[in-house]
Amino acid sequence: MELFYSVFVFIFGLLIGSFLNVVILRLPKNEDLVFKRSHCPQCKNQLKWYHNIPVVSFVLLRGKCAFCHERISWRYPLIELLTGLTAFWLFPNDPSYEAIGMAAFYFFVACIFICHFFIDLDHQLLLDKLNIYLAISFFSFAVLHFHWSYWAIGSALGFFGTLGVTWLFYKLRGQVGLGGGDIKLFGILGLYLGPTGIMMNIFLSCLLGASVGIILIVLGKMTKEKPLAFGPSIILVACFQIYFPDYYAKVLQWFL
Ligand SMILES: [Zn+2]
Figure 1: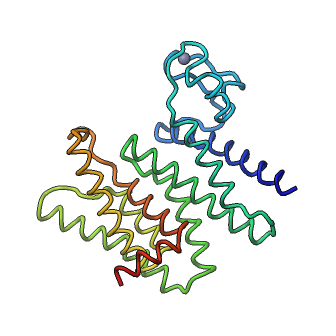
Figure 2 (figure 1 turned 30 degrees about the vertical axis):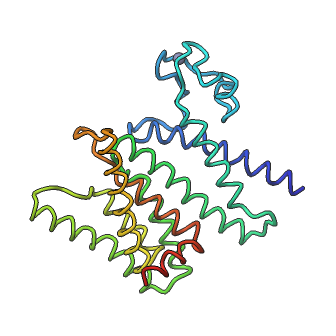
């Protein structure tokens, strides 16, 4: 029974991951998420249902389109596997309604993080359409679990703090540092992370973003036309804080 449940949860995660691929591809272009059939981006042939089985199709087709044999990005099976494993990891083996509700919350947040991460990498965009779901989830959770001062101050610090620094930077240097999506995301994360957590997130994600930027410059991979997306750094740090609280607590001890 336990094995059956685990397999079920993993397959459920794979299918959701398959949907996240569609969201990442289509949401920035405002295309229909549900009713439009999938096409090969190269030859435009409509995919059959058996070309769309998460991970399995990719392996059977050896990573190539069934019609034109153009390479399919390894990102599709990677995102499916990542989502499947996340579901497997988060959903408890002994399911009570309360535990499942909690797991569903964390899984939903993880799904939005995955979409945000890859859409920002591709388009330098943290979409409001995703931010709004994240804001509703965190706000509901915060109201139920935290004192209002914790989430209100956390969110205000995240939003107005980064907005203020961005404004100052703009006045002094004439450059826009953070995008509007980044600032909103900080405000939303502050609801869950609270005052200390959001300050740590801002600090660590700047550190991570700067490190990745320097590595890319050294490797000659960064160009003026495609600046580094900052969202992925914010999200990686937030994932560390939210999903690995024990390790995060150890990092926090070094600073405090
Ligand atoms: Zn094709």
